[in-house]
Every structure is written in C-alpha cells, then in structure tokens.
Length: 190
Image (cartoon, rainbow, N blue to C red):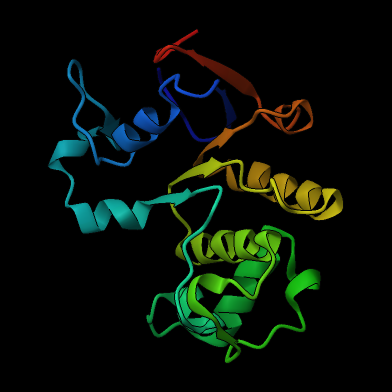
C-alpha cells in the first residue's frame, strides 16, 4: 500500500479484520513482521517516537480528554497563542459551532459533561493545532450532526492537499468524501 498527500483514503473493515493492527503499525506502536513502513522515506523504526507523535495525528472514535481546561486539552499544556487556537477551529470548518466556548472552561474528567460529538470536535481541533503530515481518523464524525460533518470533511479534503488523510469510513455518505477506499478483509487489503 502507498499513501500520498493529495488524496483522502477511506478504510472499510468489519470487526476483527485488522483495522486496529493497521493503525498501530502506522503509528509505530507495532513493528511489521515483514517489509517496512516508510514515512518521508525513513522507516518508522528509525523515527524518534516523540517526533513521530508530532507528525501523525490519530483521532479515535472515543477521544481521550482529561480533567483541565479546554485550552489544556487542546494545547496539551504547550504555550500556543489564542489566535492560533481559534484559527485551527476555523481551518477545520467548525468555528461557528465552538465560537462561544471559553478556553478557560473546565472540562470534567474524561470530558464526561460534554456530548460525544463535542469530544470529537475537541480531538479534531487538537490535531489541527499540530498541523500533522498524517491524519488517521477512526470514524471521527460518528457523533456529529450532518451539517458540521460535511464541513469537517470538506476541510479534511483541503488539508489532504498537504497531508496524508486516512479515514475509517463505514457509512456510504462518508466514503463519498474519499478518493480511494481500501477494504480490509481478515487483515489483508483488498
């Protein structure tokens, strides 16, 4: 398989077919049993793990939030100017939805006071702040309304001009945003 910037890739996979294993390989958590995975021409095994986390954003179905402020959850305690934080929401296409949110607003443990869709928006927003070279998204809009979802996918298409974008896409309407769809069957790409 070869993934290049400029295309949005959809990945479909039934339960137990190896989707998580593929993601863990792409994230450098697992070593391949055969062959190698290259990023920027360099095998993942040769990448510094901290640097790898900077260039690859993984957004799971159930994002991890921690007790702290919205700003803390977005910036992971980095000193990022407020203008840059709001610009990232704009880049993702949902600034109108979050414009009334306060960056100093406290989020409970795990963001439990937020809806599942709001937690997904925060995870996307956090990733957009880093401007990663690779986006790996596991049904990132499963809990988001259709209008906001459409805006996000339009922005992901724009971001794909400079980045590799991989989306787990089970629903036909999500696959419509993808340039190529890869089906995993029993851990093999079809």
